[in-house]
Image 1 (spheres, helix red, strand yellow):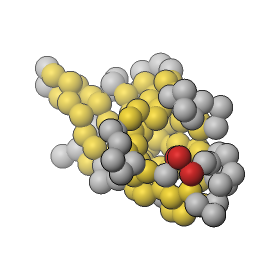
Image 2: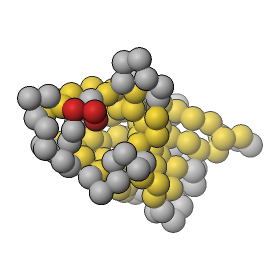
Image 3: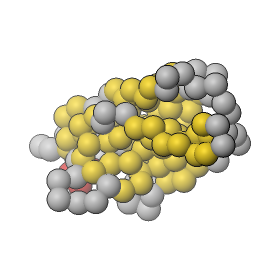
Length: 120
């Protein structure tokens, strides 16, 4: 059974840094991608970053480009989000997303979310 678990959230002052981790287990296929979405109260969930498991290419949202870095270790099915120069508007629940082929269809798996709060 596929499971996705996030860790690393917390409270940080503006300008600070946090590193989020996401560990996926129960995966027996290659390909697809892992990514981070976030959602703030009253706002729609938005893509933050994504890394493709095949070639390692990445997508970074404009709002965090230059401040956030996504990376992964496919041997461990683990993904990281290094967040630097954090701003109050980065405050949100961050969700790990795993997108893989199960049988003949693409399936999304989500973690429970981890809270990131940027406040002085």
